[in-house]
Image 1 (tube, rainbow, N blue to C red):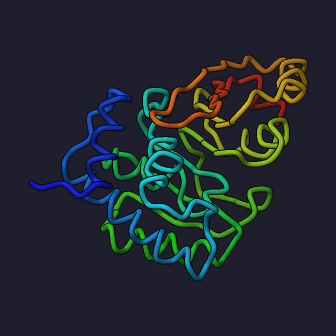
Image 2 (cartoon, helix red, strand yellow; image 1 turned 30 degrees about the vertical axis):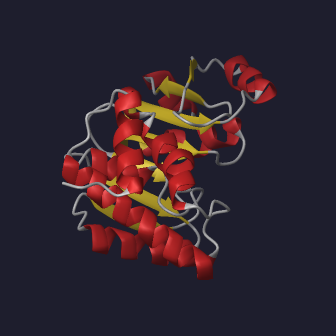
Length: 217
């Protein structure tokens, strides 16, 4: 198959991340980028305009966390234009992923993308995370550059089952926020991430939900 420049960038980026992504997944991710570029002209979903830059700043920046995900259900809090949840759903078709955001405008795009990509492993929910009341807890919760770290922990810990995992994606390390969280007795793991082609800091802060943290929240 003759790859487009965008598809080639996705393929090479995944190889650099040592992620095994099926040819069909590469095609779907390229379609997602095309949709994002088209809708962005009207809805202003992202400041990134160039499709090949979107591969780096949105797709690879999402897929870089794949090695840290467990099996099971995943809630993407503050998904915005579907990031990181949609690329993760394409790369892991066996996972159940819920995309949560309060913005009706952004979720219009997300729902259309889910439909056009044929993703039957994705659900979309419109709500503020403080008010979200799912029928059951999740195995994992993830967020990408959403609000203060301590606030994220306080609002999402209730959404994760005991033994589940919370994953918070950040650029630079927020030292004061980390100190606040650790002072509260939360065991925090910090991973420095390298995104191919991206000249910027990326970190993943993650923690397992214990029975103790269940009772605190």
